[in-house]
Length: 209
Image 1 (cartoon, rainbow, N blue to C red):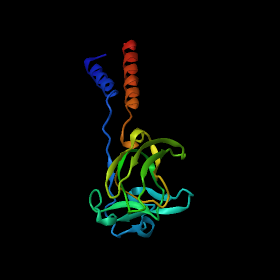
Image 2: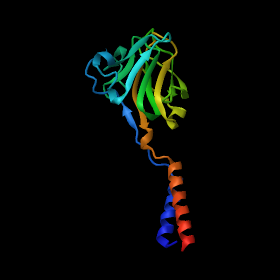
Image 3: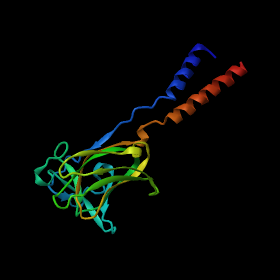
Image 4: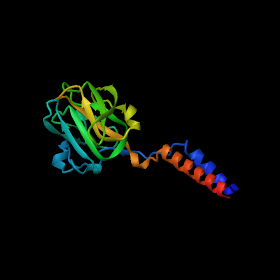
């Protein structure tokens, strides 16, 4: 095996143990021109950011995602002017990504005094709608933005995300959902297999010589 081949194989072996960078997408709910309206009325429930946005109460009655410029009591969105909220008091809000995503976290706040949701938790499902992981539980405060970490969801291939509050007809708001496409993050194991294959090829070639 010549020096150049050996150097290339050494580099591949090193890369096998190095995680490649991921590229996050922040969904900030900007560019929503209507004030205090639903995703359905805005015509974006199946198209916004290329995902499908649905919601339901605990009795599985369908409701919708809502979009607005300001929280109640004139509290600003966490960033920019847009944010999403529980239109018709949905207990669970769902995002069908289409392409599997890692879920890094989301900013969340309570909304509407007297009907404020107490907690929020995220649940991740695979492409067959099997539960594969969840986040911790965040205690919500009215009009105060807090970060809910995805926890294990940051390392899983989530096809469907559920954001669930403690009860129906309770209100919460979301901003800056942080996700990244699983396909954009090369798996270190794949690189390792490639490296081992090239090493095997090199050894076999050396044997022949």
